[in-house]
Image (cartoon, rainbow, N blue to C red):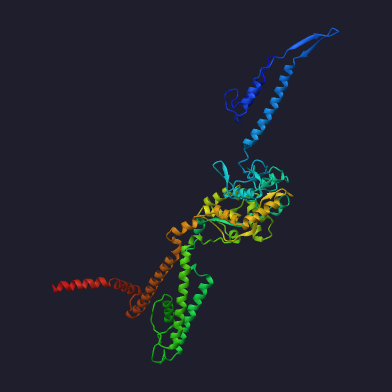
Amino acid sequence: MLYRSPSAWLLPLFSPYNSVGCKCSFPAVPWCLLIELLLQCPVRKRTRRGERNRSGSFLYTEDISATMDKGLSFLLCVITTMLLLGESSRTGTSRNDDVLSQGIDSRGPEEALPTLTVTTILEDPYVMVRSAELEGYCIDLLKALAAMLRFRYRVKVVGDGQYGAVAPGGNWTGMIGEVLRREADIAVAPLTVTSAREEVVSFTTPFLQTGIGILLRKETLSQEMSFFHFLAPFSKETWTGLLFAYVLTCFCLFLVARLSPCEWNEPKNEENHFTFLNSLWFGAGALALQGVTPRPKALSVRVVAAVWWLFTIALLAAYIANFTALLSSGSEQLPIQTFEDLVKQRKLEFGTLEGSSTFYFFKNSKNPIHQMIYEYMDKRRDHVLVKTYQEAVQRVMESNYAFIGESISQDLAAARHCNLIRAPEVIGARGFGIATTQASPWTKQLSVAVLKLRESGDLDYLRNKWWESSCLHRSRERWSPLEPQALGGLFLTLAIGLALGVIAAVAELSNKSRRAAGHAKKSCCAVFTEEICTRLHIKKNTRQSQETSGRANA
């Protein structure tokens, strides 16, 4: 058997290159040269020497130098192995695929800090991957907590991409399951604190407050603008009251004008100009800020007219103000303000994240409206439930879909996408907390640290940093013309009024033609046709007569 010197098998361990010339994963150490010099000392080969004892048998003895060479080689191997392990521990820890970031030891190399395994989920803006690194609200929060509580951390993304729910077999999935299985020490993510989760894990003080809201697309809602949009500044009750006030005031004008002797001195010989129809016309002219006849003479009539004028001025000011505000913000007039409005409509589909706390909130709620929402989503779960939050936002933007979810996440979507908006109503106030194992010593420390960050304003700073929006600035600078639906009712009203005027004129002419036909003993149609031709050709006949007289004078 060939003998190899210790330098022949120890040197490859210290060389930065392997047998094929490729560079190894660990760097060469400076003390390799010293080891090489020690191993290159002259060593005698192993020999076997036999002597016959008194009984005649041979005794074999081994060279003491060979034995020392073997012990020295073993000792050097142990020492170099320990040095290699110490060198690798000083240069850094190895990188795992699931570990994407690691806390920094701020105490120095002499004092060891505890290392926590943190599980999280990729969701904008809480945790995002940028240039092979993690960033976001939760990462900044984790850095602040690590600096305050003095610990190192390793972050890994949850394997199944779930927040945490009870599987059919009774086991927990998602980040809650990883904390229960001790695969992670804590979970820092937009994880909602619920009673079911609180029974199996512990939560810290919530670092974000949220609720359940409805995310909608503005373009879908703007198509619901009524054709009589100009009536929107006042409610139906207000318009009814206005009509009643108009008729009552006109009747009072008619009555006072007949009772006042200053307005109608001699009823038998004079004609009262304030008939009921004239009174209606007078009131309508005041609504349009136009002066019309008849003019009141008596003090009593003038008092009624003056009060009506003041009423119409205030009414028009209120209408113009409301109508201006309505037109300037027409795209944000949501027909869906509450969850009850969402249930009553039939145009938009709605759903939430599958297996999320929002889904189980509607499932366990005793509210009839909430029960209707749950039944709708449960019957169409394969179609209306989404897997991820990004899928939900994309579906809202591209189809007639309303997403029910965390209001704070919906505020972010509305901040990033200016064509999205959240409905005003928010239900089910809740919070995002850090999940730890039950009876974990970190629960109390993390809760106190979160409270300190809130009191110092750091949480508000992070909230403004990651939820910053430019949609409000853009909406102020951008001008857009009014849509036809906004003023379509006005044009329709004008057309109806013009048609009624023409019809009334034709009816009056027909009535006159009927009376003239009775006196002249002619056909009513013949007289009506003659009247029409005469009235429509008055200017033409006048022009022809002027041309004839001009020729005669010439």
